[in-house]
Amino acid sequence: MKCPFCGFHDSKVIDSRPADDGATIRRRRECLDCQKRFTTYEIIERMPIAVIKRDGSRQSFDKIKIINGMLRACEKRPITMAQIESIADDIEQELRGALESEINSDHIGEMVMERLKEIDEVAYVRFASVYRSFKDINTFMDELTKLLGDKR
Image (tube, rainbow, N blue to C red; front, side, top):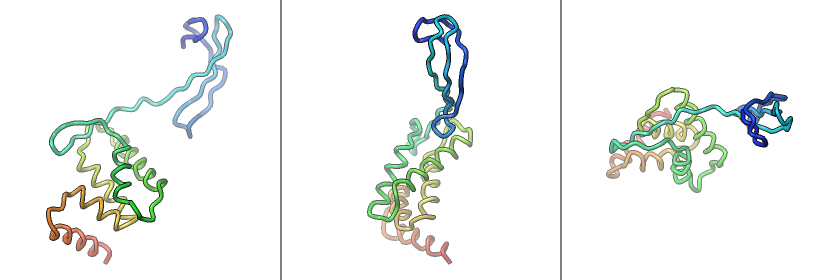
């Protein structure tokens, strides 16, 4: 590790401890030339995930887009921001755990709907109505009938 003070290319680690709930490691280092101390952080390099949209275009995965979609669906519902963030975190973790570099946006939408269905049926139907682009009242009713059938 290059010393930020003198530019020497060698240092020793004096102390290491987890930071950010174990997501990073904080290291205290000492330069072997000037003996000054400095701190470095080691983080996991994450593989980028490309989302394949319905039109075939590709975009980088963005957890904020999932949160924004759920916020619209959960408006005026008894769902906390912590629940929404937890769902988005779970989805991101599941996608990264799959070790795939490309994921279909339909799959992500299904994951969101599955989780919303568990915590609030109204939010689920709202999200599904936008995500599935209901063309008329009949397709909307079909989704509601499926939802009611699942409850029995």
